[in-house]
Length: 280
Image (cartoon, rainbow, N blue to C red; front, side, top):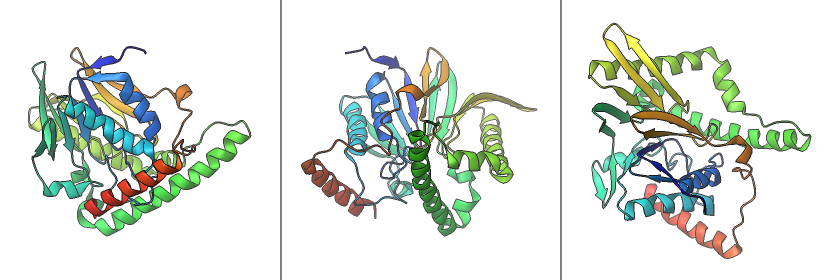
């Protein structure tokens, strides 16, 4: 068995468990390869907007089980709430052993203050028109399904994989402007508060770069997502780095068939039903 890599702080965001687009198998493979000292789940881990009681594959359950095993073993796990799992915001500072639910987190790492939160507070469409935002989320899920069909056709004729949603986001000027405004706002607020680093999720855009203005500088970071980019943030020896799941190894993607037995499918359906009752 290959030795696990030690990671001082692991930050993962926007997994969207319970949706078709989630690459849970790849994520589980990654989680099994590392040994974190501390874990931060930066929002939209379980997608309570798009959650379907009948869709809860074994791989999705195994991701949750693996994270809970870390907490049971004493690894500090902080679940920061996002817009897709905002129901958890009803329980601020909820704690079960080493697992804590919060809205934001301030870490001091090697003398530097790192501010971590999901970032949906910057999204006016979510704050002021939640119904429209949820419709947008459903449209995104539909786009993922269409993308899967196109990928099957593209790969069957020897072509590479296609990311429609990524192309749409990158080609629409307004979307690009939103991402830029989002990142600038987060960085400026961090500088105003005297933080040396700020970590957001929400926009599914992995990042690790310095931001400067007339008041100072800050490192802006984003762990990305496990829908399109398959990325996470790792902190070791005073440095942050974006980890990208190896494309060559990403053969078992979300659209591939599950290996579950009929009994496992039944058990997963029951677990999903219970989870669905809890988050409705």
